[in-house]
Image (cartoon, rainbow, N blue to C red; front, side, top):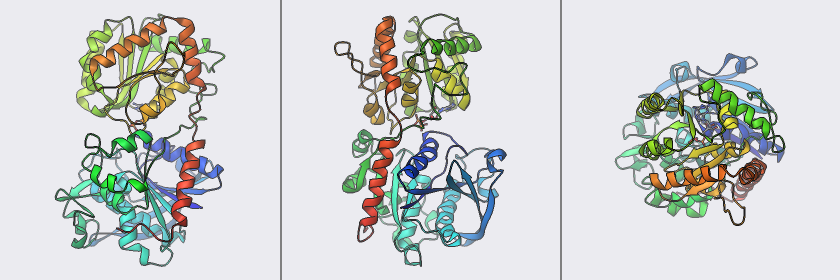
Length: 482
Ligand code: ADP
């Protein structure tokens, strides 16, 4: 099978969150199963020169954005055996960050068409285009209403993966003609119209042959009013084509036994070396080098991540014998809050506001506990990476957290973390206290750490499920009718 991943970010080129990890590691795993995956993404100005050293321009053409024609170059580069196509347009992508611009709708409308146009210029027609999140949401729709009648495009099927339903790419009605070059007839509630606007994510849910999301629990949740972000009705209608496949992590990149970012590497049989990483982080952050629990968070600083709960009981957390480090960037209100708390609790709390991959690995390795009390969590990679580094997750039972973290049961000895159900600050606080209690029982804690480190979070099983999903839609006699 030939599969093209269309995605807005991908490791090692560019990353703002878990989506990039998925797009970077799943293709390699699918390749092991005999599926040939190529990846297409925008060529952002912030991609390192080093990674582009061997890239070469293989096509140039123009892409229609409404009535305008915009330049498009396709550069090819191979990394770890996977072919990447970078869509080059400096006006749209040579900027200092990935998203958050007034013209994001235009930038990604362009990108969606560029992906589809590139196929004929590259003379490369995959069996499946696997699109990820709203930035690629118009691809399945445009393919069906416009490109499928062209030679080479007839049999292409589409999968759309929802990594986060909260971001949908909602644009004014005018974008339909002005940016996407589509006729008004598609502006109806069964297709592109969404409360008087158009919606990229909805377009994909309407048109893709299969829709997947990144955990079985999130798949169920998004069909409810509470988590469904006003698309739950549509998702329910497409339930027979909806699947939940939990993400894996790249177990070579995240491997405490060989991680070059760490002060000292370790594995479940050399746990004393994990302590060296903790001491080093305590020293670097100016925390007392004590044997008390070090709780960490590594996260985008957004409401989704349950930071309101943390704020609500911050003082109570600090009244425990605990140290706490936050590595994150995002909402300025949370950034300021954590900076202020650093000032109030200099002996216990430190915040590093920024994005730093190496430091993230060091903190995963240094941490005893990893806090992730999300309001919602499609899958979450942080908790899985944390477990791999022996940092015990404390999470709310939602989405992928519910599918990957099982609360420690002191009677059976089973479990790999600590969990709570309701989005409630005191429930979180009691769960943190429960974790602290077991931290003080060294034997119990060590076996918990070893259990967590030994769990297989690799991509193997999930890649197998994606492969199955591709095979199933390819074997269908026709594309999904809408
Ligand atoms: P999301 O995709 O919602 O941001 P995930 O838990 O799925 O959350 O993935 C987050 C990824 O981004 C993890 O690999 C995590 O280690 C990384 N990450 C988040 N914030 C930072 C940061 N400030 N510095 C470095 N890595 C970060």
